[in-house]
Image (cartoon, rainbow, N blue to C red):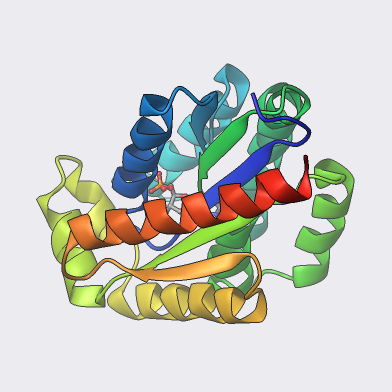
Length: 221
Ligand code: TMP
């Protein structure tokens, strides 16, 4: 448990950027230091939010379905899942002053739905206003990979359907959106290139985490 405040860390990036891998690595490194930490994800993270995740992903990957969710239905499902997650997991963990590591959060909705699918930003912002309250990431790692490398990693996954989900151009658009978000939020976001060496990326992430934690402890003593 931290002394006065929790620390909320998010990982963002396109599929195949290595965010699930790197968030697990950071979680394990923090745990080794006997610091209270949880690892969670979006969409999902709680039983009810995972149910909504399943509905979203079934729609994405069902090969025979003719009627796909409209982009607004999709967006509202991500937000519904986020609300369940915030109420039942994120807010309690913040109250318990834990370190929270979350694989995807609000930046994914901006990058995929708003920039990628051109969903109205006001809708997302206003729902966020109600469901987030004061919840905001303190540190965000935006993982950036060469698009061909990311697609190659996706292709190697067991669930190969995922590779066909979006076009290469869509992934380029979404990755550019993540970079834009990171550049507009320099205090919170760190861009990490994971195209080549995942061990290097792991070290950079851990170093940045320690820097943030030290500043955090001084500020909140
Ligand atoms: P994952 O690959 O990280 O498990 O995420 C599942 C999918 O959900 C992925 O295609 C990204 C997408 N997503 C959105 O489109 N908007 C969101 O707000 C979130 C959290 C995820």
